[in-house]
Image 1: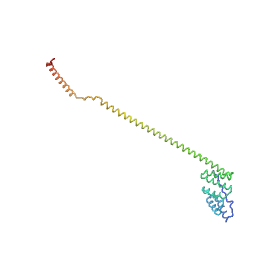
Image 2: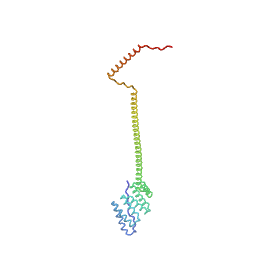
Image 3: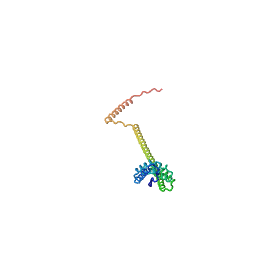
Image 4: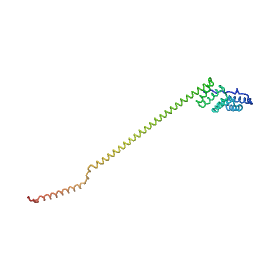
Length: 252
């Protein structure tokens, strides 16, 4: 968990400006608002103080704190950067980078926050809070990398599973198509065999002698009588032929 940012009060404000009491009053009231968590009112008072003395490190720094508490992190970072250019003190600059790191960390900008904490520790190597927040940011980055890696592995695994499933579906489809084709070919073959058998049977039937047409009993009797009469006439003709002399030819 990120530790809370400690506000820097305007304890070191110079009083060489016009109407310093009014400036001090604005600062004190802004601090009271901040401590009572009225951060928008604190921001307003600190900005009014800047109008009286713009080039004041503490004023810009405290505005950054008030904006941070309102989760206006980009505006807070800009206020901290404005404070940084107004001081050459390493301790103050270290606090600026520390709070910039906090604002970036709140936005999940891990690489940038880590860099800000490192810059802070270069200026103040013994700051415990900065070391803690740097460790926390590095841990979050490691978790994020592992999560992304696991997510990529899951995506690759799901993709491989989908490819395998598609291949299995295609193989099943091809197998079913082949089975249907084989079945159709077998049906065609059976149909052709049946046609050939029918043709052979027709041909055999045409080659076999046709049975004679059946006749009635009366018709058969008439045919027999006719044959008898014809045979009787033939016998008569033969007897007559035997009774005649045969003329012989001369034998030269």
